Length: 471
Image 1 (tube, rainbow, N blue to C red):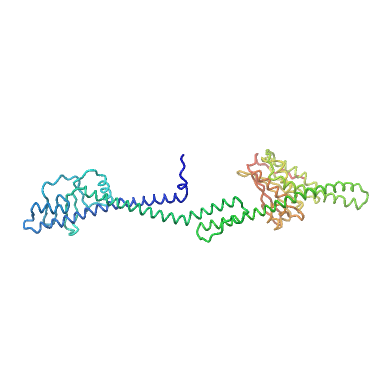
Image 2: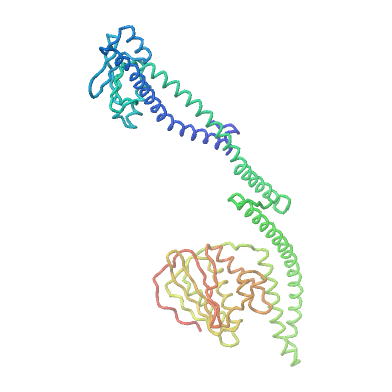
């Protein structure tokens, strides 16, 4: 398909063309009634001239004039014959030999639609017609004047009048289009072009402040768009700077964690030898020392894993959720020092389609966090909805502090425990979002905390009674 030239592809040219078209359409709608009105005035002037011409008959004793005078009077009117119908008499002026009448028009009974149709018919005629026109005299409303005349002179006058209107319409449309074009260029097209250029320039180098569009003082929609774009560019620029600092910090933390893990591994090997010591004080301190070293090594491993892995790959399979929760309970409860319990309230027949190892990791992390925060009872329940499976992990702990709720799911900022990193919840959200779902905080108060895990796809199997609490 042949492309339009560059001038016609622009918004300005299209607006110019549309303006010209719309003005011309408006002029055409005015043209037809105007020509019809011109025809009516033309015929009414003929009626008035005919009334004046036939008054010469009233000046004669026998209401008759000579044939040469009659021809002269009819020639001034442009008629073949004139008839004056008075209440008391009828006067006639003709030169003899009137032609056959082709059409009769009574102007007194013609409406607007009839006048427009008659005008269009007159313009379409290619041959002269003899018209008989009747109307009330403009000099005396009690007198009816009848004129027999040619249509060709009237048609010629209508064409000349219509040509003048058409020429004037073209001039008016061009002037209107030019003024509207300039106004739209100033008010709309030029600001939009600046917006586009600013977007393109900003995309090339978002961190260059000179490429940002200056905020506009205009109070209209264009001004609002420019201010919002300026604000958005500043927000993106700050986010890029923040992310750059975080990336640099993450690289530094990864290097430090790598070196620290090696140091801690060496310390762990050396500490293992202390476990065989017979000194009572050493035996008492060694388990706590080994636990602290293990936690530090695990922290370094989690930090390295978070900074390197990104979104984990998902290997989906369908499995019973209750069996997975039972395995978590068997792993968590023996390590609880204060006898905390994990209650499995998942229907035995409920199945989900997800990565089993990753979902195991998420629920295990939530359960451990709750127990370490002081919860004595953690319950896991699940239900099927229209297009998702919702898993709820609830506890009876003290709830999350306000700072932890404000920075929830943010790494290194959302931990509720002293010394925590907040990586667990951040990784849990990454895992759920990689599945197409999400994790949200359902409720957190002094009575406990509830996290909601949403997995896409309704759970398979029929609902059943909750499985027995794991012990």
